[in-house]
Length: 296
Image (cartoon, rainbow, N blue to C red; front, top):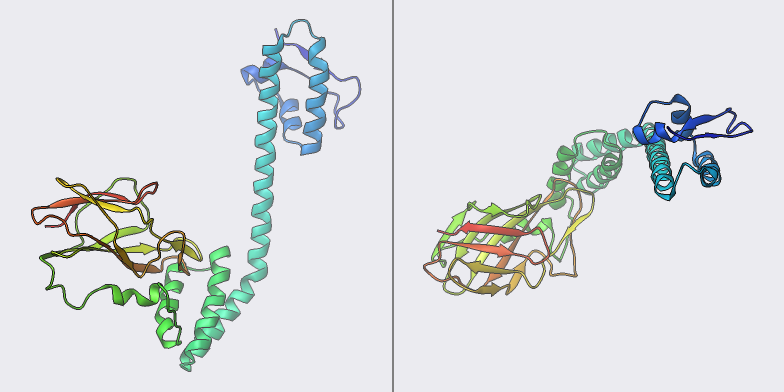
């Protein structure tokens, strides 16, 4: 039989009584549900009342008390978190409506500048719209990011360091110096690394070149490579990273400005044995762990 806790005075405006049997067995109790879904201050008062009431009941030992209080606190915490999420969603919805006209104005101005071939101004306005779109989701960001990428060169955007502006530099004009080259090689994405793939593997007597592509998933995402990254042939030992192209080594960062933009880069390692048919690419303490990469 559950122990009933009665309050002599109304709690939160209610004359309240419920049993801890309701809590432990999860029996429906409308009064309890109403109490638990109240705000933080009211929940705190309720819990304090329970803390004072429980010790006087001889039928309840410490274990029962702990179970009951944990149940109440767990329900209260879930209710508070749910209320906070609803509040955040309401604020975001209001802001989305508030800034929608700013987004539409930026898009209109961007298209007008683009029609006049004022590339730099068009790029700035598209990026202004993209900032709002990333937060509030007015349109397909993939299309907007593609438009921005196409305007980088036209708008005179320059970047001396690694960036998506230098993607074309990663693909070599001639691979005849390599013993063999394989595009889109088959491999096993061991750690299910998201937004990254291997585009090409080229092997020579001097080096093993792995060309890769990484797609941004949020605004101003970044990527880098651990200097301890290595490859390992199916019969050989570890071959450590020698150099990189169009990407930075940790702790430096290479930024990808907008979601769905893609950064191409190359990792250079010592040569694999001529008889190697597959190998692994491993970045320690990372999801970049690709197994059985076919190089022949």
